[in-house]
Every structure is written in C-alpha cells, then in structure tokens.
Image 1 (tube, rainbow, N blue to C red):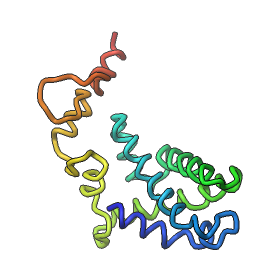
Image 2 (image 1 turned 45 degrees about the horizontal axis):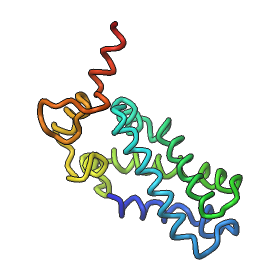
Image 3 (image 1 turned 180 degrees about the vertical axis):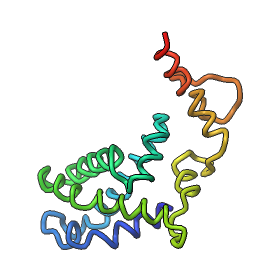
Image 4 (image 1 turned 90 degrees about the horizontal axis):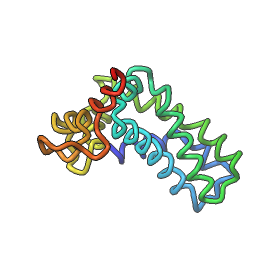
Length: 167
C-alpha cells in the first residue's frame, strides 16, 4: 500500500514539487516521501485515536476533512524542515494533499481498481502485524491495542471515553 501511495503521489506532483524552483531537485524524492508519509501519519493518527467514525467519513467523503487538514499540516512541517520557505510549503501542501487524498479514496472505493484495497489500507495502518482484525477493533474500545484479552490500556479506550459522557 505504501508503495502504491508513493506512486500515486509521484504521478500527481510534477508541477507542485518537481517543476517547482522552491524545491531543490535533490530534495524532490524526499518531498514525495514526505507527502505520502504525511497522509499515512494522518490516517494512523485518526485510527489510533479511536476516531473510527472520522476514518470512515474520510473514505466516504472523498478524503475531505480533518485527515486532509492533518496531512497538509504534517507535510508543511516536513517541507519547512527541509529548508523550504513556510509560505511555499503551505502552498505546495494545499495544492497536492487534497487532490492526492481524493484520488486515494476514490481508488480505494473503486471495485474495478485493485491498486488500493480498504482491508489492506486498514491493515497497514493498524499495526506492526499488518493485519486489521477483531482484536484491533477490540483494542480501540478497551484501550488495549496489543490484542490480549482482559487488560485495559493505560489511556483507556472508547468505552472509557464514553463513560464520562453519562456521569
């Protein structure tokens, strides 16, 4: 999935990165990696925070919303860290992250396109084992993301967060 996302980014950044005088040619590859990495980081953050509804909305609404905002922000920071002017970094992020996310989500939802499979995407985001299964979902609810039964995670899960709403 990561290689496919990097390829999708590469196919869509010719003007914003490769032909952009603000991005030195020797940093083109790093900037492309930063773009795909920022998208993955934003999706992982959404999943690990337990915001399953937000993650589902991302894949239902063509990639719009907080994941795009978070990925854009992360990408801007990475570009600025490479020495690219902050205004230019913001402009580059704004010009490519929403487009890439829309195409990524469309490809994931397209039954005729097997470059991205939602199960594989979730598997890559879920954790080191690369599998998204019931224990991953259970972990989100209990706060225990190591897949073992019966133990509460130190930060609590969705259930603990919901308990506070009713007290």
